[in-house]
Each structure stands twice: as structure tokens, then as C-alpha cells.
Amino acid sequence: MRQIITKFTDDDLYKFTMCCAVIENFPRTMVRYMFIDRDNTVYPPGFAELVREQVAMLEEVRITDEEIGFMRRRCRYIPDWFYSFLKGFRYDRRLVTVEQDEEGHLSVCFEGNWSATILLEVKVLAIISELYYIVTGEDKAFDYGDYARRSVDKARRLIEAGCVFSDFGTRRRGSAQAQKTAIRAMKDCGERLAGPGRFTGTSNVYYAMKYDLTPVGTMAHEFVCAIAGMYGPLMANHMAMNVWRKTYRGALGTFLYDTYGWRIFSLNFSEDFANMFKGLRVDSGDNLHELDLIEAKYRSLNIDPSTKQVVFSNALDVDRAIEIQRHAAGRCIPSFGIGTHFTNDFPGVRPRNIVIKLTDVKITESWPFYSPTCKLSEDEGKYSGDPETVGRFLELLHLKR
Image 1: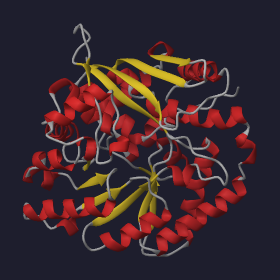
Image 2 (image 1 turned 135 degrees about the vertical axis):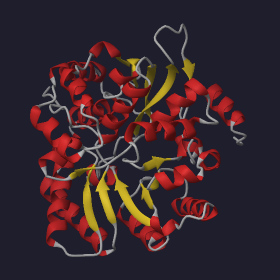
Image 3 (image 1 turned 135 degrees about the horizontal axis):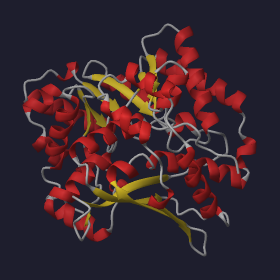
């Protein structure tokens, strides 16, 4: 089997920004992650062994001077010491356990130092997604010429509707070629078409470098989840915002607020945070209802919500983004991060509904036990964690199940 991931920065920007913040603030923290297949897919026989082989191949992937140079130019908020860390970083297959039961269901677990495991998640998800289509033979139906044409049409519609949008599709892409095709097509469309909207870049650092785009992203739910596991969910958002402020000093100012729902975040989102962060990211719940809540919160703090960015990234396609744009224009500065719809939208092909979530954390390696954590968000269908932990967090947050 050919190697699927061959470039170190073939990864989402937020993994690097979070890794940097973890090293600076939680250098001894240990974590566990678990793979979740929401469709309960039966994988072909031998699939786990193929995943293990791909993880082992990652040990030979090194960051290049070209990649470091690009990140230094385009990611000026990242401190210079972090590139010395990346230069010496090596993936370690021993941190990943991959199994397959008799029925064919896949189990993947990561365990180790947070800074060592954090750069595995997106790569392993991309491996599993692309590998599935290779092994099942579905990739033979991928028509990349048609995909490019349809990607241009998506970009054209978004630009004409005034949408500012970027690619967030690394984790569940049909293939690296699909993501590359979509990014190239949308960039070319944006350069040819003068319109009120624009294509702003991609979360994938390598393809941002390849196509001279801006890497896009800040953080993921795992950052708040880990803090909640160590210190509790009531003030986890507050602590996360403080850590982010300390590390990036006002840069990377879009906060992902929905790890434990709007209510507890709103209680933590004081005027100083609201002024410092340039905006918020909506990743669950009803998009327009969430916008109403955000707008009201800013007004309660005497901040004009039309000056604040709101990044929508909740299971979007072109039609949903255009609908949100119609409602959000003038009320905030809307933008859109679109994932699977950009990178895994082949006719007749079902995208993998897979995630990897942080489930357990301990403050240092010397602690004899892990503390479980979970993610709740605004959609119960997006809850992750064992039922006992979810129930305990709901009780602590005074939320109904």
C-alpha cells in the first residue's frame, strides 16, 4: 500500500497552534484519545493492519526547511522556539493502538504526552478516510476532472453570494487529491471572478504553502475538553481563553465556544475577553439561533456585534452557507469554514462520519490516574465521552439531558 501522508504539514493549522500552547502551558499533561465512527462502519478484513502500517510510515515524515520557512512568513504569531521543536519532532507508532473486532468494527486509541499525541489526530483520520476508499475500490469512481468543475461552481456561487469562505476538509477528505483539486479550483475561480465574496484559504498548512494561500484556524474542542478534565467544566472556557491570551497575545482571536454549550460559555465571556477576541466560531446548534445569542451577548457588553467576526463551520454546504450569509450580513462579519462538502463530495460516495475525541487527561505523568472528560456542544448528537462522564458534566453545568 502506498504511503498516504507524506508531508509533515499535511495537517490542520489548529493542531500546530494548540500544540504550541500545550507545550508552553501544559508540558507534562498526559491524554487519551478515542476514535469514533458515528456510522458504526464494518471495515474490510485486515483494515486495522493497514492503518498500523500507515501510522508506522509517519515515523519517516519530517518537517522541511521549506515548510518551516512558509510557516514563519504566514504564521507570525507562532513563537520561533516552536519550529525547533517541530524540527526535532518524530511520530511514534507506540502511541497508537489500532484493533478490529470480529465483526470488522475499528478501534483506535492514542495515549501519551499531550504535545506528542496532538499532531496525530488529523493525520490518522485522513488516513482512515482515504484508505477506506482505496480498500473498498470506491476510489476508482473518483472523477477529478468533474470534481474540479463542480468545485469551481461551488466557489462561484459562494463568491457571488458575498460569502467569505475557506476549506476545512482535511480530516474526512475522500483523498489528498480531492482536497488538492478543490483548493486549486477554488483559488483559480477566486482569482478570475470579481465578486463580493472571496476564497480566503485552507486549514491545511501544506496546501496553503503549495498554492500560496493563508493557513486558517485557531483551536479545537480538545483544548477546552482537556482543561475541563483537569480542572472542571465550569471555568474551562475562562481558563482556555486566558491560556490563549497568554500564548498568542491577541493573535488567533477566534474562540470556539461550544464545547459545553452557549450558557456556560456566555457566563465566562466577560467584556475583556469579548474585546480581545475578534470573534467566535459556531460549530454546533442551529446556526441562526446561535447568531442571535452571540449578537445579544455582544450588545449586553456594549459591543457592536457588526464589528465582530462569526465563523460558521457546522456541517455546511454551499446552500446552507448562502442562507446564513443572507441572515448574518450586517449583523456580524460572517465567514465560513466548509469541510467535507469541499473535499469528499463524489456522486454516490458516502463520506466517513468519523472523529477522534480526547477522552481522558491527567495533569502530569506522575499522577496515578486519569480523569475522564467529554464534549457536550449544542447538539446532543455531537456529545462524546462515556455516558457516566457526560451525565456528571451535565449535572455540574446544570443542563438537562
